[in-house]
Image 1 (cartoon, rainbow, N blue to C red):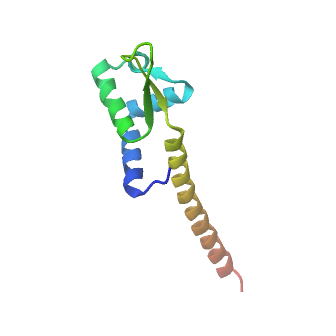
Image 2 (image 1 turned 60 degrees about the vertical axis):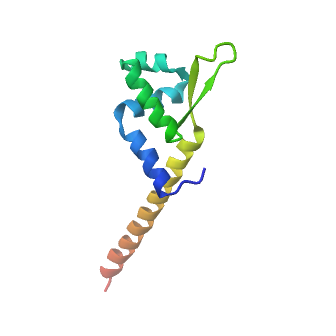
Length: 113
């Protein structure tokens, strides 16, 4: 999942809400129905529906319907979204590591006669 700046901003905005972040944490443990998530978080079902819609639109979660009962939706965390955020953070970390190493070399070089 290659992510550009706009997509990353969408992912991060979706994760900025504490309730949605907690939903992601719960889904990292196991798939769940919306009602289970609402109960676990103490959130009313309409509010949970809004949170799940944001997470779906951002590509962080996916849902599936059971053949035996199409009304039941099971939500799962999309591994690709986690990988995309991790890759972005790794790029930021690599940049800062390089900058700090350069600064260290500069400082250590100035202290020599």
